[in-house]
Length: 269
Length: 288
Ligand SMILES: Nc1ncnc2c1ncn2[C@@H]1O[C@H](COP(=O)(O)OP(=O)(O)OP(=O)(O)O)[C@@H](O)[C@H]1O
Ligand SMILES: [Mg+2]
Image (cartoon, rainbow over all chains, first blue to last red; front, top):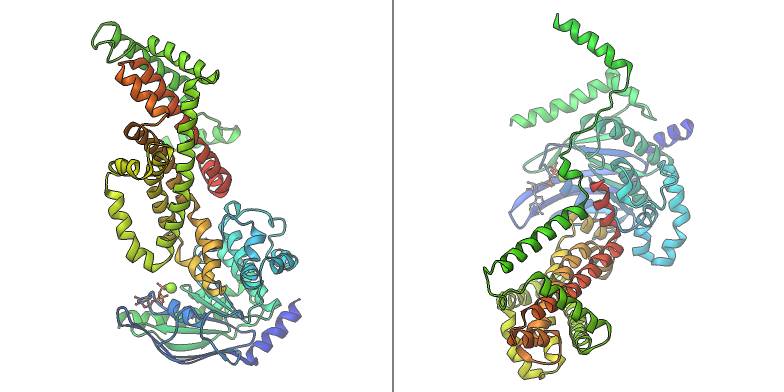
């Protein structure tokens, strides 16, 4: 298990580019706010990247462009050699809220993307796969529970399953666990890492938490506001798999401190 | 000194369970049925006093006992299939068809107004304008158009009941949050899929709120229609009794009518519990 994880971790650093952004900018026509300017980034296969920055610096805007929810004003967005011009099947998205639908059981919620894409019959066929995913996130036995009876953490785990069921090439996560308490959040982050390594998934995480970004990522993008841009790219060379114990190591502390100093400086400008 | 006292106190506490009961007022512990019965008895007693001591004329306000007797009389007539049952049957039909019509029109218009930008911009203002009118004033028009049969009453009942359903449906469709919308967008859902698999289920609680208001309005519409447009329904019975100054009869007819209204309301509430089961779960768990 650990050997596999280490192998994929190595592959991540030397992986092929999956997602590429070239000189991406976004100006909201409504209020003429330039939310993003000249953003360049490349996600390699199996890598985990995080973007961190102060509130309003354009993180969600960036993620919306990457997921095809809104078009960029300038630049080029390419996923798996095809330009992104709208929502795509090979993109999985996760939001701050679990957004499970209370009239569907957990299992029905998870197969919803399949139902929308390929119809009810395909969704039924995907149930075996959904059960396997539920087991992967430790929700075995909750297949027929309604979301109203799940805790916040359980609901987020179910929404991870929903994201994974279509086997997307890239996972876009907009502060997925920020509504959870710190203990659950740490636990969920380790779960997320495990899932990403077992499936060799490429992940891109928006977060407000520096430790969270450092413990999960291979690369951390530090953003600055007005206009939103990537100010620094920090490579995290902690070994994989990461554990929560690493958060007490001096190296981890130094990385967190480094990123914090970058963010602090911008706050005074 | 006080420190030591607290320490020994803590030691005693640690030995046994500290089970204690919350103090509640004795009134809160009285069963609800008894509380309701109490209000009922007080009401009847007051009513009895007002009539017994002649504060108001018997013709204006009959005694509770006269009313009770008439309730029994009307009840017997209804059960034995007398002329009042025939009248009730007519009114029930008006209510039923009026409600169905209101549901069909209200839901369709609600979806158009709630889902399309055109509906919201171009149709909604007119609906709001009509909604602010006193709808009962249209009754003579409906009678002129549709005659003295049940059609004109169905029309008025439906007319009154349609608007709450439109508003409930449209507001419910707007209730879908950004996250759910974005989620459906990223899943590549079509507009139809977004409507049927997300927006409409999410709108159900508000649609049912509209239906409940409509279920009250539809009764009012049918009876008003009968007052103003004649016919052979329950409203006509009330009108006749009132013109004969048979006040106990008016009272008991109204009471039976309110049973029908309550029944319709209860039916919609029961349906809501079945259809919007997830909301019921939440309500019962929060009250536990
Ligand atoms: N739909 C929109 N229309 C107009 N302006 C917008 C829109 N969405 C975001 N903005 C503007 O773009 C800028 C960046 O917003 P964005 O939501 O991307 O920030 P963020 O980094 O995600 O912030 P947070 O950490 O608070 O979520 C803000 O100045 C905001 O006012
Ligand atoms: Mg954001």
